[in-house]
Length: 255
Image (cartoon, rainbow, N blue to C red):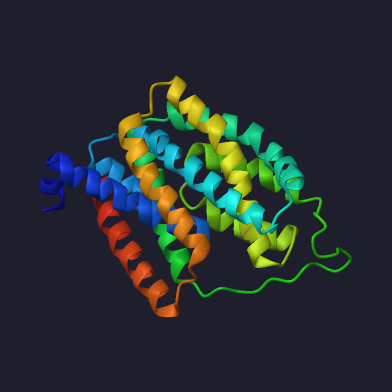
């Protein structure tokens, strides 16, 4: 039924918009929104590599939207966030080039694994982390910088689930203040997504019309996420929906 709905122009636009809306909302709150958008882009007829490139349009615009809002609330220092983002750029360029050149079959298999891990991560209980002894909260650890290079590679290569990884790394190696962690995560992703998007576009792996449709939903979702805090029950329903969708798409992609 979903595939038939995709055949109609209006149905396709509605599904793309709603996927972007959900992804933008989840990406800003935590991460993993690409679990929604990548399967939908593939259902819309894009091959996995092109879906990976097209998905970056929404990611860029929704993170810029959230960054503007968080900057107004002074949750993150733009200068420090920009410097941290610079460490991701070498990895982003290499990862994006690898993402463009990998075969669709191997990308599908890797994407299935990432989607499943991302869904499992959503179900895990949140744990608080402590700053290692000898380092003040807010002072970067030495290990933060090589970690950012590695995260840049993964973000340029696949992107799906990168928000979870940034939260884990930034809370462990920079600051325990979760709203600030989230603000830095969004700022860094907004900065490094631009060169990744340009590389995919240069290689002809971006469909702008579809990408902009998802991005419009993503912008609205990002704005809503900066205004609304999810209740526990709401988070539970989102997690269930994501797990069901990932399970269905994982089977489809793997076979």
